Image 1: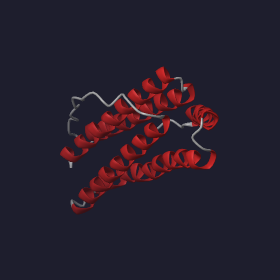
Image 2 (image 1 turned 90 degrees about the horizontal axis):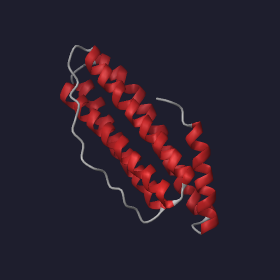
Image 3 (image 1 turned 60 degrees about the vertical axis):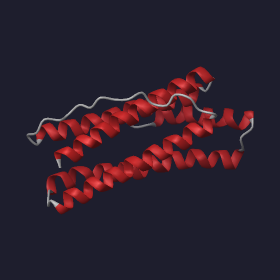
Image 4 (image 1 turned 120 degrees about the vertical axis):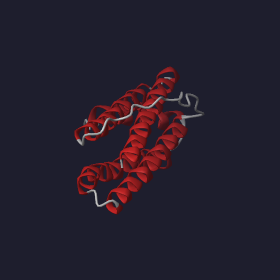
Length: 163
C-alpha cells in the first residue's frame, strides 16, 4: 500500500508541475485568466500531494518524495491546454481507483476511508475541465470566444476551493 501511495505522491507532484507549466504558457501567451486558473490548479495538486504525504507519515511509514521530470510547456492553443489537463485528471482518476482496489483487496479500511475523499474530488476535477471544453463548442473558437473563455477561467481561479 505504501508503494502505491508513494506512486500517487509522484502523480500529484507531476500534475502540480504540469499545471504550473500550463499556467506559465498561458501567461506568456496572453491568457491572464487561464494563467491564474492553472496556477491555482497547480497549488491544489500540491495540496493533494501533501495530504497523501501526511497520511503516509501518520500511518507510521515514511513518505518517499519523488524526483520530477520537466513537464511539457508548449501548446498549440488554449483548447489544447484544457484537453491536456482533462487527460491528466483522467489518469489521476484511474490511479486513485487502483489505489482503492488495492486498499479493498488488502482490507485496509483506514486507507480506503482516506481515499474516498480523492474519489469524490476526481469527479469534481474531471467535470471542471469537461465544462470548460464544452464552452469551446458552445461559444466557439474565434478570438472573442477564446477571450470569453479566458474571462471565465479568471472567475474560476478565484472560485477554486483549497484542497
